[in-house]
Image 1 (spheres, helix red, strand yellow):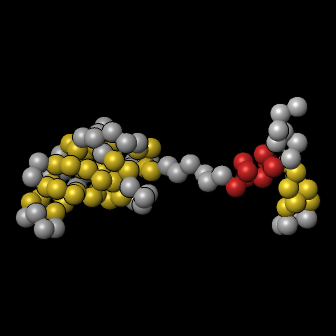
Image 2 (cartoon, helix red, strand yellow):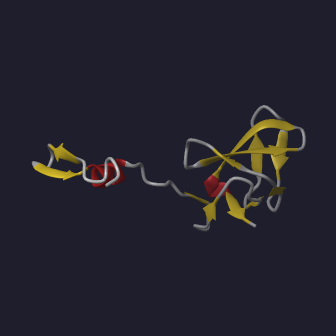
Image 3 (cartoon, one colour):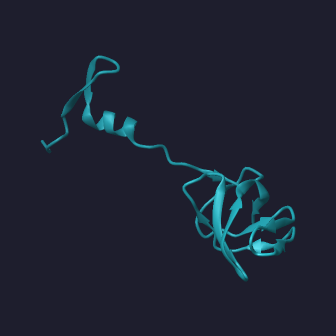
Amino acid sequence: MPDGEYDYVYDEATGEWRLASEVAAAAAPAERVVRDSAGNALADGDSVTVIKDLKVKGAGQTLKQGTVIRSIRLTGNDEEIDCRYEGIKGLVLRTEFVRKR
């Protein structure tokens, strides 16, 4: 019998003894899903298209509708993505203004 297979833990919320594996599975954080403006799931490395003209603060540029942004990176915030574009360092876009390609 492997160690830990039948380890029990007292669950104070329910007042019951439960298998440690069940308690650990319930406590595991849910996988977060970042979605674009159309509801499509985004992942690191995806390409997105800008759906609205956006003025970029500090860069003096405007990203036009239809601009393709390649190789996005997800951030800690589900409503923002980190990306690169010509001449703009540290560009962060809100997911409500992009659509997955």
